[in-house]
Length: 310
Length: 310
Image (tube, rainbow over all chains, first blue to last red; front, side, top):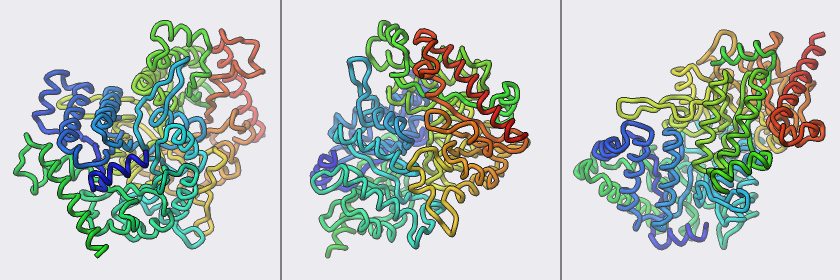
């Protein structure tokens, strides 16, 4: 799957991922109204609204992008119908040829981590049959519990040729509270990064590992260091756009081969129509605004990479 | 809700929680057969099997115990139908007067953490209506992302009078990989414990905080230290029984008031009938075996606490 991700990135020439994190407040009124008319102001109605919203954005952008990253929390807040909308979104994106990174940030121990891995990346055995519950291509994983928490994911990933991105340095302001604490002269996130590199050896693709890392765009200097610590890890980079990261902050997350990083934008793409810059599209053409925001993001990152090379 | 948890513990005289972590392999054949006869060997069939299994165990033990802790991963592995079985289990336990601790180990940042908090502990706004998706009473939370990840949970908890347990020192063998790393002369888990105490000040009950901690029974010496660092935090203690923790290991997790800790056992209770000790019950009386295992666990912990006092 890491090979397919790379192939998709090379084909689109766009090292980006669109975060499908649909807050109900992002969904234009006409979409909400239609969903509520059919299902009422219910969990099912909200789930239908975010699904239709996602579908329109995917339809408008899927030829430009290699991957999407649905944030499961935004679906989970709508209970069981929300989880059904999540699964439907994953399926639809895969039909459209997109790689799906489930931003689930799961992590537990032993058989429990394995259950998460099975539910999101694998197949569960039921009597003589097997089923794939949420069947994402990649999942994000929290490392706080150590190898016991991560290795069951790697086990399932090896069976399924799927991958994970382990949280190393997150994009939020308080990420330093624990992640930056100094241990033997080096911050915790570097130790986690070293461990990611070690875990990655256990499940390699051709040139990159199936075990990637999450490093926030908001910390470019740390990204530069982590790039070197984990040379074979694909870095999933959140924090671009709405959280403050810019194209020029991103160049050191990439390797010299021009690969090695994939930059996420969520609100900046899916709620583009709410920005002054794209206001001319209007709420009725929200998906076209998202398409334009994708084009602008790719341009911003490409020109920064070109400038850095030149 | 922390008051209700304490009241339930005092009423039952049992500082324990039953982990409803139903692997399909724990579910006796007659229960599986019946579910598969109705729904086939499908995700729905598996969800029905684990729900009926849970129901029987809850019916057989609910007068003896204050709380349950369903592990969402075990449901999530069965996709959307599994999540429906999770919600049904939460509802049923609440009807029976039990406090429900959702072992979800969620954790993200800002609006994403808030979405998790809303989905598991709060109410989501849909048009003019509100709904509670999974409506547990407590949830477990991963601290790796720092205050940005935890405070949105506390915000929702304040609105709803609900609580969280933050992972501090987990019960697994590799928990030390990051949690035990020394920072300015003290292990990371102590720093996290201090932060839990500080977060806890923001949402206090009468004598204990709504912000508790997870500390594994497998590390009694660390439990002793953490008890002092977080005097007002309820400690949820996994790792008893199948993972190796014993009654005598637990005494230092409690405060002098006899409160302050609640000990979880999952496999040791719900799959008791598979142990030699309870084999006489037979698979058909699996729920009675669970009841006996609860009685034995309470006796083990009570006598250890009594001995420590005397």
